[in-house]
Image (cartoon, rainbow, N blue to C red):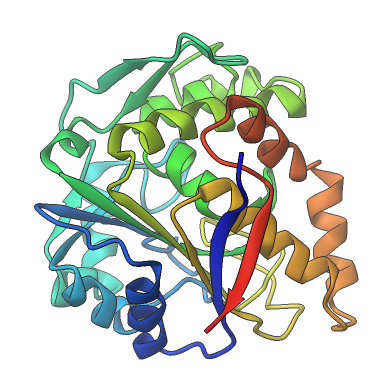
Length: 293
């Protein structure tokens, strides 16, 4: 594969998100889904609605989310809708819980490394294109969270999240934690499921990773560590593998002393293996050209 283009700016503002999206050169059309993280109740690090407002309006998008598969304020439609209101998402945007009602959309993955099917919130079929707006940060289970996690765990229904986390053992969140696989099988399952969503939109999907509030914990944690590194910038690409690899490289190449704590989290969970597995599935490449704007 040729190197993928990944655009970068150190400026982290709502306006710079719009600018870097325009630089990518893909105009998302039709009904545009904006996949982002609504933030668990109590979390302090997630991207706020005010930050996302300019880009969502730019693409005339609908904010989309899915219910979770663990205890908290987002594991049922009723609770998640209340949190979306409490966090201000419904104040500014049309919001669509993709798995608000079943049945889930089941997609086959013939070449999956671990799982051979994926369960998505069925409402995803309403959209013609997608903007994946990710807060790049650490993650207790995945090591890190970026574009690939948004495609996989993020777009999966509650049952789909259980299926990915268990590497295909169960889609029941009530017994999920009794069926956790070896770590690499979970990471490979994330790569498998990410493939399905990327291929669903193909050339009608753009990825933006915002490297701010760099905690080792995910926005899904109600009690999360404060950031351990200074903000780095915003990246954009049409390649979810390249953009995540570029973010990882920026962390490793940083002179910020806090990077050691961040890297320990990534390496403890072998987080880079999600990128390795996704690259083997060939819906992107780890080779990229970083272009400053």
